[in-house]
Image 1 (cartoon, rainbow, N blue to C red):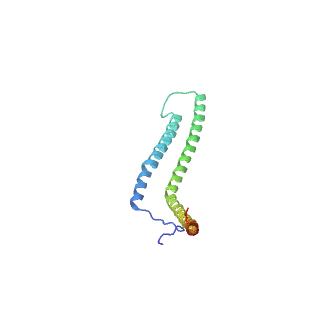
Image 2: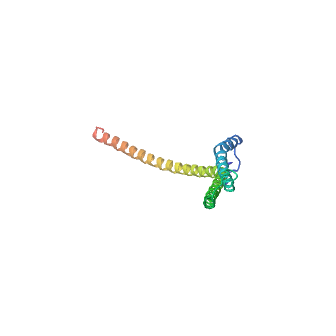
Image 3: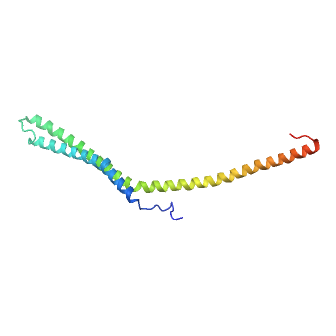
Length: 154
């Protein structure tokens, strides 16, 4: 047997690899990148607004303090979102790299288990069929003996 389920291969079909990379780019990387750009842009806009460069309007000092508090909260929330987004990207990258081999390994183990079950079930089936055939043969012999001595069959 050329392939052993105990050692999963680390090669992949080049066509399949190209399709997976293209789908990964358009379905995972691009949306995450757009969200990351939006979050960074929002952080920059808030920072520029705080310094008065985005919206140069005279404000009172209490408004400045409340704006700084809002900026701090928005930055903290944005930082948490950015960290979660990066962790999700890393997890997706790791999953796309490792899971196909693990799924293949599990598939091969299940195939081996199915073959063992099939082998044993065939052995049981043959024994049950043989038993039924033996019972039918004994019944047939008994019927023929009965018909020989009584003159009538079943």
